[in-house]
Length: 175
Image (cartoon, rainbow, N blue to C red):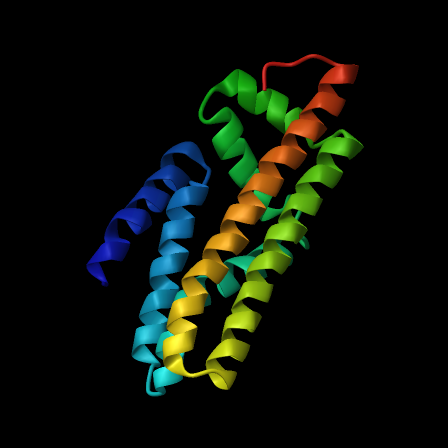
């Protein structure tokens, strides 16, 4: 599993030194691998193995909520990555929207929602693990994570579409 971290670490180091930015997807993969490694190393209790998959969602949710204390929240960078990629013109438009109160509020809200959903998924899984038999937890939790992730993705696209419409109504753009 340690070898699996090699590519995301190297990609992140390359992006940081060459482009002066971090690739959010590489960081997401790295976070997932690191939390899995920690769970495997610390897994003396069989219940931790049942919680292991949610260590990532809990860590990502916590990272989202903590990022609200920084100049731009975590989901701003994911939004820019997926909406603008490396296209400099689209990135400029996306970055400029941060200065609009509607755009700033939208990025903050998306970050809060992802943070709360994933921290909530983690807490709910822990509660299930300590209250239900392992077989029941194994049957339920894949759906729990899938519904949490799928529902949040669908909501994010719906909400981002509405916000873009509002922003484009006042000034047209390419993003």
